[in-house]
Length: 353
Ligand code: NAD
Image (cartoon, protein in one colour):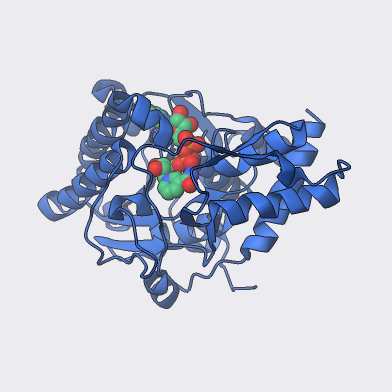
């Protein structure tokens, strides 16, 4: 699949200072790497450096780019739950564009300890919005006119689907886990700051991402690493929960298009046309590993059903018509291509670690 995706530099135009929150995480890291490789912008990476943070992939790009690259990436180790530190960080960053990805992101952790999700995702977004509003209001007219706040959210805010239908921008919110409820709350705050204060915002709600550098607690890296280690591969319940898988680099395309060309106050749903049951995904990974690392017996023998997640949403699927029609986005990878690239990356990366 191909599409005429403009470079980050072409999309950013005069936006020279980009504040990426959560840039040490999985998706934020992919955004930072793209910005460093494809533009001349200064990337200010605000992250609390929690358990899911890893700067290795960014350091690799900085090494690739040499001394010019190093000057273009700044880490601000800040926790958004601290209002004062957040305000100071935004002031120091002085951004033209904010891409807000920082969040507690793992549903299972939100079931075990919801408080951290309310603190980071709700209070953290509130603190950031307040800091960004003060910054935006104080900008000179020309910079104020091009300023954007892009909030990155999830399709999980829409709840769970039956066997048919897809989520779109007009689907009512119906979050069902502490994680999705905290993300829904953050979406509402962002919209409120737009309608009340006029803050120029854009929102995106995407489906499940996968790809290199994902923290190994989410389904795809867990399955690959367990299978490679010859350990039981956990599969929740009957394995028939459906997710609409999105390759992370395709998501970065969508994020840059929405951040730079999306309409103020508008949201865009992003999905990879990759609907698969968890069982199908696990079996596809096992097949890829049978070829890459033959183990004398199919890796699928390791699949082992485990007790289902509490309140496990049955099916998510996205209708990405708006972002395709209005911003020209198309995923560049089929799920087969994305999974093959991901499995190969984990095998090579962990084998050489
Ligand atoms: P991740 O967990 O890999 O990374 C999140 C980063 O945010 C981490 O580095 C963490 O330290 C940072 N962070 C968390 N709380 C913070 C705080 N209070 N202050 C500063 N930094 C903080 O998550 P991800 O998978 O990269 O997801 C990024 C964003 O995309 C999140 O907002 C998530 O809700 C959204 N999203 C993710 C997916 C997915 O499949 N991964 C799907 C839909 C939406």
